[in-house]
Length: 181
Image (cartoon, rainbow, N blue to C red):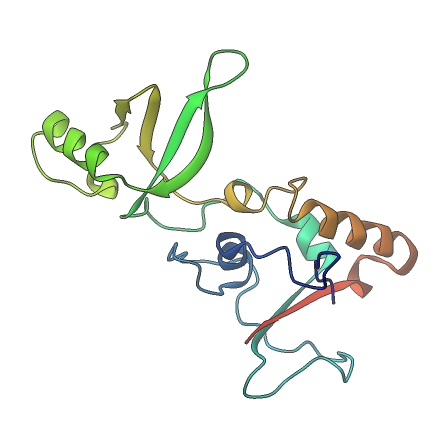
């Protein structure tokens, strides 16, 4: 088991959106196809992996499975209805995805004015976007890279630890086991 805790013993890594994309634990995104959803306790797990009424919703992934993930594959069949991507100018001046957020009312109002009717982001016309206050708001279809980038601050260290262990024990013999109570 890999868990991130601070010097005071409290958990420091709690990224609900990444957990939803990876393991299907609800995080407010309504992901259609989490990568490693509800697989249960893996066969051969150590006895100290909790499996009771409080600690449940187990899942796991081997190092081989994690390494094989297409980070840009869609996790939904359509853009989300309540969230938009916020694109900002990057270092080269081109737009880059900065973050995903609930659609601000002002953006919905601007979209209604722009498109001529009251629409949720997934209903905007193809290529539809709203430019406001230096940002560009666009409908988004979620990908694993958006919420669990392979070298990001939350999941990068987990992937590195799994990679190091796999170098000794083999990709199929290293598993990340998770459960949500």
